[in-house]
Amino acid sequence: MSYTQTPSPNFNERKTVLRYIVLHYTGMENGEMALERMCDPSAQVSAHYMIEEDGRVFQLVDEDKRAWHAGVSCWQGERDMNSASIGIEIVNGGHDFGLPEFPAVQIEAVIELVKSVMERHGIKAKDVIGHSDIAPGRKQDPGEKFPWDQLARAGCAIAAPEPKNDALSGDIEQALVQIGYSLEPGLDAVIEAFQRRYRPDGILGRLDAQTKKMILDCASSA
Image (cartoon, rainbow, N blue to C red; front, side):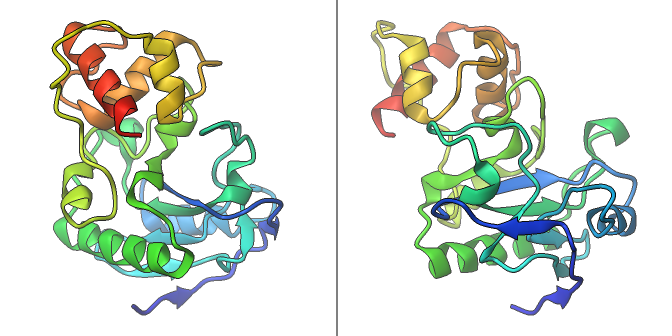
């Protein structure tokens, strides 16, 4: 896979083991503006890669360095997600620009890039996550239109759990923590993040029977 090298000054040294991939949308009007911002030292943000709508891939930060993409976040108890992950920005206007669809050629490039990063670093499909997963209530990207199911079929993410658990017993907070979520943003925010990731057609921000079953089943296979 070929990359256009567009070095960003916004990085430093990793402080922990690399074990996750975090997917984002840029949330800006276009890719050119997003690339410019991530290469601006005063912005103090960056990512390892950015994928344009036409499938072009830009590398901003070397994989062995710590890009600044995760912000205040937590997953599976890890609070320095910048150190623990590869950040991939996907050009998409996001919620501020009408949440457009992701072009097929762009998603094909996302899958190819994610697979290559997984192979290089031994990252598992369950450890490919969204920004909204690690920062519930603060971030919504890559958003409910992102085709996680397509990535799951390609083996580079996990699919939404089938709600097979007929018994609605179980500690939901404990289950969410077992999956990887931090409860600090509040239970409703975490449930909304879970729904955005696993049930994008029903984002309620509150617990219902189907969501409870999905959370329990997801935790049992985590």
